[in-house]
Image 1 (cartoon, chains in turn green, blue):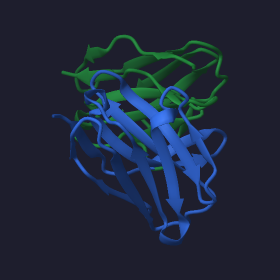
Image 2 (spheres, one colour):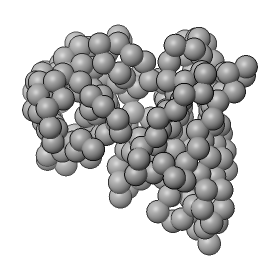
Image 3 (cartoon, one colour):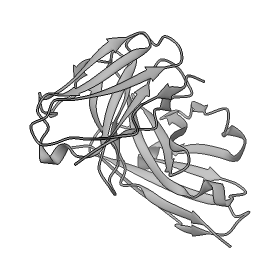
Length: 106
Length: 119
């Protein structure tokens, strides 16, 4: 199985901050990497697919980069509604695996 | 607008069999894979498996032996069955649509069902 790691598990930020969230795969996955946002009590919501493509309806302050084993989700100017947990997920092969998440809070 | 609505038992006793169903509204049922994913505090998000409209399945090898995913394409529904539940299976279970683009994505999710296993 491909292991996905995310560190830190949480980070503190303020409204207006530029936030970067890293993700690493245990082997090369090319650009088969997706990012999801999850708020308490809700299902995950797709933000970025194929490492850098913005899902329809997602604000342009979200962007993704990377290939191979190292990836980054960037929020250019953090908004109040962005305080949530962010998960990366590899779509290179099965079993499809997720990272443990990074929680962005105050 | 695609909607996934799921239901099933929320409180179970050890050794019982879990059954969850997910209904799909608002779009074609064929042309996609339909997945079950669970989330627990201890293991995070864990992909269980997937099925397409004709019944072809893929499972997580670490979980396969206790899980069965089935489909009723005439009703646009798919189901999860898990035998011999234990406390370790306590989690929120989600159904989700998997769509193939330049990669595969989970683009629509059900609302989640909290399954608690307790004696």
